[in-house]
Image (tube, rainbow, N blue to C red; front, side, top):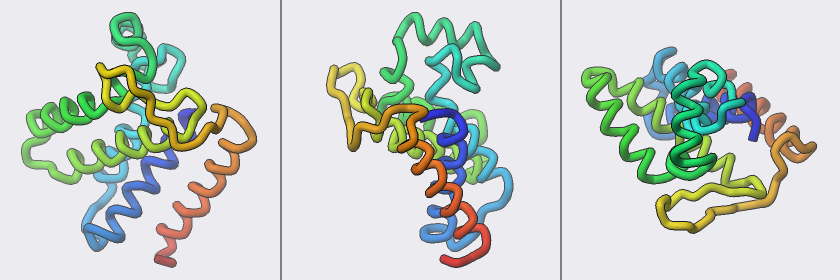
Length: 157
């Protein structure tokens, strides 16, 4: 999926969790964290939105792990959780938002042809569907996510 799909997906995932689980208890930091978390796993891709912002880190991670391996895994999610608790010990909203954003990224990339290696380092690919990145079908997913974002924002849920 492209960066814009991941960003909208991260916000929608945070909206859904905030509405359904947290009863609307979170503010802007939670949603901003969800947006960051939604693009964070693509740090392993040098041409991604986040990869272009941190080119040295992106190239290093891509060289060591490749694309959609470690940064798209349960192991990375666990490591991110530990680092977030250390960086933001008193800000559960930021911790939760980033983790939800990462999870939304995984779900969206699992919809693609390539899938993700969720159980890295095991060589098992997780695929839910076979949508090509940048295809008309991804545009449909993006449109659906955009509608869902408005739906949550205007309180139809």
